[in-house]
Length: 90
Image (cartoon, helix red, strand yellow):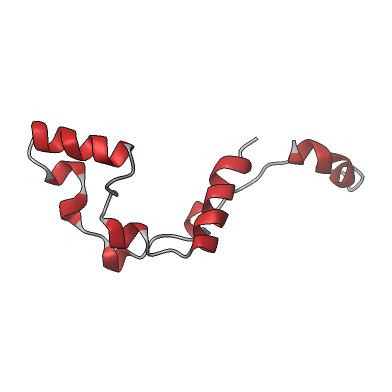
């Protein structure tokens, strides 16, 4: 939708096509200093423990990489990342 809205402006300059490069790496990232390998599905033994961990991830009772890793961005940074992820891919 955004490209369609902006296209007439650039068509006046002679452009017939447009594209967008989204630099995902430039978005607010979690701090890798806080990442805990032990808080990943692959670190859990197969079976009930891994299944329980996966269910906790799904229900947001546990976090991939650990709670400190999850909380290493501010609320504003999380909101900006969420907006980019969910509202800019049209």
